[in-house]
Length: 185
Image 1 (cartoon, helix red, strand yellow):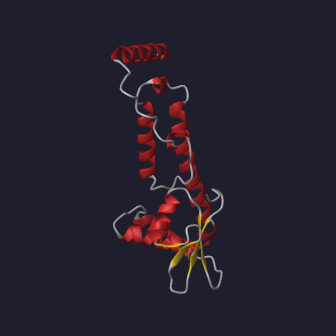
Image 2: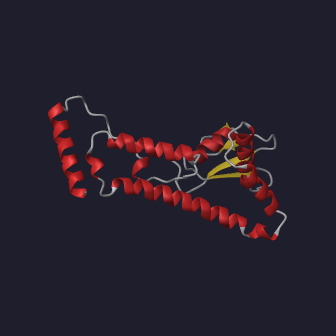
Image 3: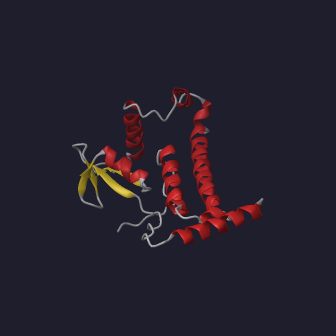
C-alpha cells in the first residue's frame, strides 16, 4: 500500500496519456479527480522534461466540471481571479484562498466533532448512521474539498443490529435519553 503522506505520482507521456505509477496503468482526468476527492495528494509530471504539470491538470479538471454545468465557482469569483492576475492583488489572492479553504475544513471538522462530544443523542440507536449521513452531506456540499479529513463522522457507520434487540431495550434507552435531556434543561 502506498504511503498516505506521499503524493501519487502520475507521469504524462509524449502522447499526453497519463500513467499511474502505483498501479502501472493509464488514468483519465476523472480518475485523478476521484483520487483527490478520496484525500490523495497527486503530482503530475512530464516524463521527458520532468516539469511539474499538477497545477495545469487541476485547473483542467475544474474547467471540465464547470463546462458540464457543475457550477461551483460563481462568475464573480472567476472574474475576480482573472483580475487578480493583472493586479497587485495577485500576491494576496492565493494565500487568501488557501486560508479560506483551511477555515472551511477546520469548521467542518469542529462541527462534526461537536456532534459527538457531550451529546446525549450519541446513545440513541441509529445515531452512528445519522452521523455518517451528515458526513456524506458535508462532503457533497464541499465537493470533496475536505481532503483527507478523518474525523469520527468519516468512519463507516456501526454495524446494523442483528434484530434481536427487543422493544423493551429500546424503550429503556429512550427513557434514559429523555432523562438526560430533562437534566440538561
